[in-house]
Image 1 (tube, rainbow, N blue to C red):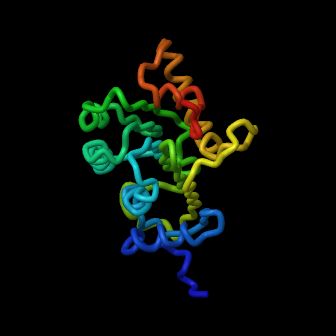
Image 2 (image 1 turned 45 degrees about the vertical axis):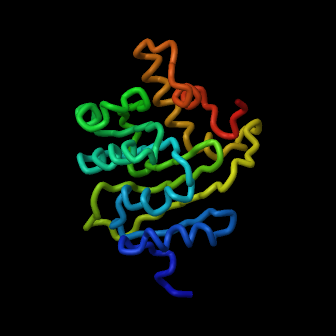
Length: 210
C-alpha cells in the first residue's frame, strides 16, 4: 500500500476525497491531513455528493471573515438552504455583516464546548447526508503535524429513526440540538416559523414523513 494513500493533501482534496469515501466500506472513511486542508476546501470537495441544496450544520471554534464570505457564497449560489452554526468565539458581528439577508434561515449559538475536539460539518437534505468530523481550520496550520478525520456519506436515508441509536444524523447532531434549543428557550422563543429549523430543534432528521 502507498504510505501516503490515506493522507489527503490540499492540492487534490477535491479529487482524492470523494473517490476515497465512495470506495470505502459502507461509505465510511477515516483519513488524515497535516492540518493544511481548510473547512472550505473540505466542503467544496464533497458537498456535490449530496447533489441537491442542503442544510449545513457547521460546528467550528473560530470561523473568520473568510469563512463568512464563503458561507455567504453558499447561500447566494443556493448550495445551502439553511445554516446551523455553533462557535466558541463570538461571531454575531460577522453574521450581521455577511449573512443578514439570510437571517430567517440561520440559527447561531456561541458556546465554550465548541472546540476542535467537537468540530464537524454535517450536510443533509431529504435524500442524502454527509458527515465530516475532525478539526476545522480557516487557514492551513503550520504547527499541526497530524489531524484525523472521519467522513461518512449516506447515499440514501434508509435509516431506522425509531431505534435509540438508529439515526446517525441525529447521533452526531445531538449536542448541537441541545445547544441551540437551550439558547432559544432562554431567549423566550416559543414558536419557530421555519420548518427546517423547527425540525432541527425538535430532533427530527431524515427520513421525515411529510
